[in-house]
Amino acid sequence: METRQNIPTKELRSKEDELLILQQKAINLLQQKKPSISPELIKYYGYENSLLQTLMNGKPKFDRTGTDTIGIHGHQSRFNLDHGFPLLTTKKVHLKSVIHELLWLIRGETNIKYLVENGVSIWSDWPLKHYNQSRRNDTQFHASMSGTIIAEYETESIQDISLDEFHQKILHEQGFAERWGDLGPVYGKQWRAWEHWTVYQGDIKKQNPHLNIQIFEDSAHMRPIDQIQATIDAINRQHETGVISRRMLVSAWNVSDLPAMVKSGLPPCHCLFQFHSRLMTLKERLIYWAQKNEKSLAYVEKMTDDDLDRVGAPVYELDLQLYQRSCDSFLGVPFNVASYALLLMMVAQVTNCKPGTFIHDYGDFHIYKNHLDQVVEQLSREPRPYPTMKLVNRGQKIDEFQFDDFILEGYNPHPQIKAPVAV
Image (cartoon, rainbow, N blue to C red):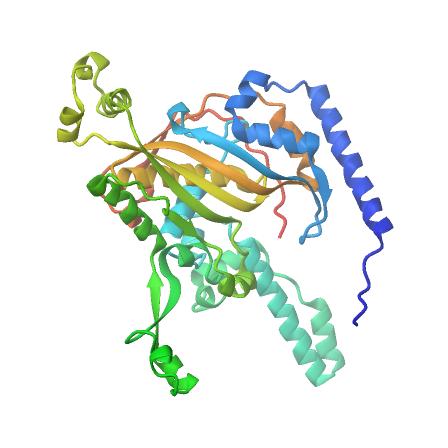
């Protein structure tokens, strides 16, 4: 039986104590700042509530990046879009990055070139790390093959390129983006073209057990599955049948593709989402149609369901629930909240539904230890009313939205708070 050498528990206790001391210092500092989030407000601002609960009650966890975190497991925030678009106000969120990333995902893209062309760098750290590591590995290999002092010196003196230099190569160096900018079969690939093997002429292997396995494999055919469109089709069918499906799901967690995702990026953090639909009441239909068409309630109060059907008023309210396995609470989650709220609005528009509530289920919700000061600063700020988001309706399909179709109004956030990314 193989004997494994486990890390001594006393070392874990020592690291745990260090994190607990940092956590308590952050809690004390927040109390000194007299946070402005009252118990009434904290119920309304679900993200800030989750952040506060994690700071106060999180447990030390030692993670893959070596940065280490304070975290909780199993938490939920809800964002009713009737109360505004959930773009955080306790710090400024870069909406341009949110929109371009979402358009990139929906179009099934996996190469960061589109993002870099539009000034979005949120996915660049991982391929940059992979590129720099590959350069070091190549140099070390050549040095070991030659065995010369000069080669060894070159290995020791090689310098990593910066993010800006990497972006310039992505944009201008022929063939560079194709080789180093692709993240592997990450979100967009799984959403729009999950690869599925099918077999011609039924199950040939069962029908012809005498055939060898090579013949069976040669008869197989790869067919991409468009999960996004399949979900939209399922939502649309409820208008025709009145039957609301419980199978309107999209998964990015393709187990067979995980090794390829890890190569230049990450396995999916926000890995599964499901749409939920319900029939609206007549009053809800009246109010929503009046608001969308800038009519007074007096104008619509005598309208019936038949009247609303004739003018194409939505019949169903659509909710979206996301399960996120790993949640960088300070940097990542604010983007995820805004992104999936936008996705809900987009799918609701192309299926003629009313956007309802975005429900965010957190798996491992954590604060990196080098984000604690930033979290204290954010939680000491008083939340402001959420802005309004409007979508231009050009009758577009889900993959035909453009950046200019998103119109944000009334966004008045506190200043941005910067923090390092753990890769």
